[in-house]
Image 1: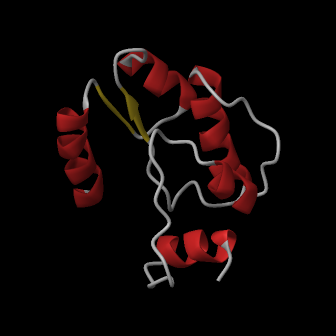
Image 2: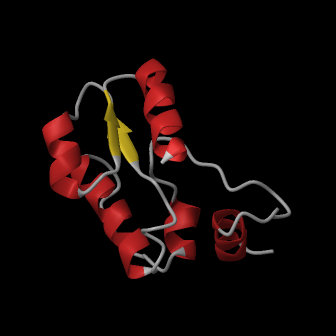
Length: 102
């Protein structure tokens, strides 16, 4: 299974040969798998680019995005179309639970 197949398999609620996992919202292999070769590596632009890449790949409805931490704000999360915002990792758990509950 290649990277793209792993991500698409996981998004479709099936079991890939390995779990596609990435931290900080940006992973070069994932971005390449989604067909995004050029994108900013760091900063708030990279978060927006990640969300746009999911849109272009037709996966936006299937993938929930959460942003947060010290450098970002809830206003920024709304502006870029993120599904949720958390000021820290502990709060992010509650946001994920809320998003998964629908």
